[in-house]
Image 1 (cartoon, one colour):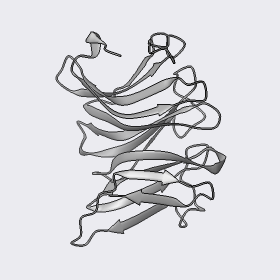
Image 2 (cartoon, rainbow, N blue to C red; image 1 turned 180 degrees about the vertical axis):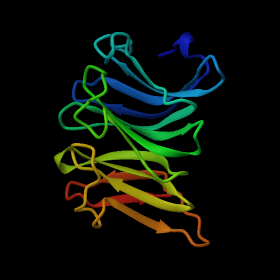
Image 3 (cartoon, rainbow, N blue to C red; image 1 turned 60 degrees about the vertical axis):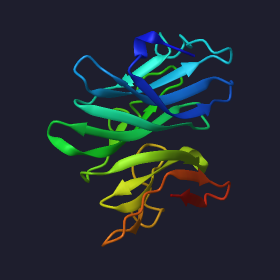
Image 4 (cartoon, rainbow, N blue to C red; image 1 turned 45 degrees about the vertical axis):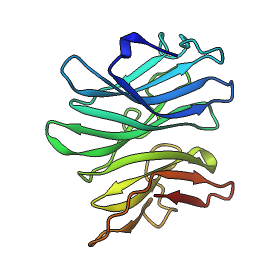
Length: 193
């Protein structure tokens, strides 16, 4: 698929839903020379799926720069988009996880109005996968340490995952970046970086 309207853009991740529709996550440059996170859904034939947000494209613009690094689909067909954002008031940035309905609208039953934003500046989200019970797992970096967030289905941190929903590895003179993530059927999380 080639879309001239998103000429200043890049893809970062791909997923396929249960109906063989292809989701592509990434970014595109806007008119103010900033980036916005984007997810596109294509039909199995490769055309933009107009049943997804009316034109097949959903953007996420929280102020300055946003990049979607990962896309996955839960068991209910909802689309989860993870990445990093930076606003004028938070130049170091934060990790975000957004959940969209299968029609491409923000799912207001997830986190706050469909979007979870980490509270630690400098957090980055690089990959995402699904655990059982439609619980998303996001991997990224925080202050030089690799970090995993696991969420409950409603978008709150899952306290059954290490007590607070967050696991870190590294830091204090070490620099670890996780780049790949998978969740096994027994909910064991594997990372590579």
